Length: 366
Image (tube, rainbow, N blue to C red; front, side, top):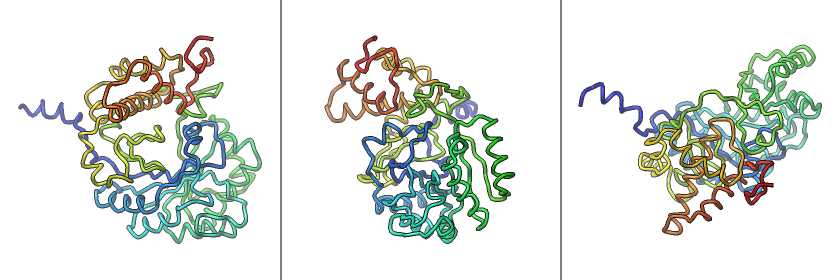
């Protein structure tokens, strides 16, 4: 085969060699209701679940041995800074493996006293930041949207955390989601001029709004139609995500999914060894997004559900349809009927809050 032909075909081969970090969703439980949260509806059925500590710890060992943690690991939720959290135990494991760690939080604990975090009790925000420094946390990621600029309570909490990060030299990120440029500039002015903070340890990060979950109901949606991974992230990903019930996937925006497997029943090593043969991986590898859209998204329209604007959100609906149909066939040993396929679509639409105001819940026109 000519070298040119080999080069042309090579990018379509499934591979995990580009994975550089693992994202552990410790829980979908949260004490806030952010307007951009993709987990809004998923959370209702999984509210009390925390990832199993032993299984997650073993996955950390496996991930390092597989070379999947060159950038490190991220611990997120939901909200990992809650009383039932196993964050302390998992941070110890990550530290013992010398992994770079990043943690997401909504900063609710910023001005609290007697903060309970799993097995540890903290007396203040300062005490928490000191502990994070001891655990060698590389980055503390703080959520920010317009609520924090509009509400003094939320603002004071995040400012308290930022101030302590600056005082103690803890690197942190402000993860900005959905805020307009003028709102960001106003918040920056408040931070630096009114609060008097010099952000020497801050790393700003912008996250797009993906119109699933809570964001599906935004009346003034400003959804980016920028380029997506065009499906490539499903078969040549940069990250792996593990949900609170052990499910492994490659897409951040598909919470609750586990098409690659589950660390409760198989090791991460075994899951990765089967990656190239996975049904979702092969489907996205062999088909363009246009082909997959024609095959799968028409079912949502036919059932009266609104389709999202963001290309990543559309990919999530496609992969969930593939995943749920596959598991149905595995359980029943047959292809679903038209009515059963419609029920699968309805379940996915409910998970991602995709009801169209012009249609009733059963898909008929109002």
